[in-house]
Length: 121
Image 1 (cartoon, helix red, strand yellow):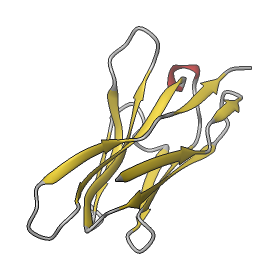
Image 2 (cartoon, one colour):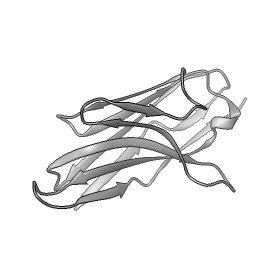
Image 3 (cartoon, one colour):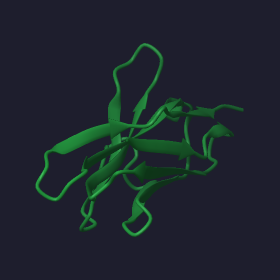
Image 4 (cartoon, helix red, strand yellow):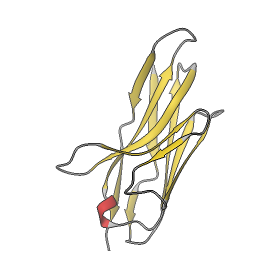
């Protein structure tokens, strides 16, 4: 009933920039928090950045100062702008949303399928 679709990944040279986008669609009443996580081969999935519906943001220390997360509540989208990319940023990046499908219903967690980011020369 709810889908999250990411876009914007690819191959980037060290020091470069990229912008990831995620769009949520389907039966959505309200999205509380949207964010980005990443998982590198052999490692656990980790938080990159999140943003609440009121605009409060949280960043991982590893990306703080070179990343900006933003969202458009009218379009149910969240973007992640990353710069000064390093090989250590190479991972599959996943969009996550905590949302309600009805005003008095529970909060559900949804994940996108992921978009690959590779930082290499």
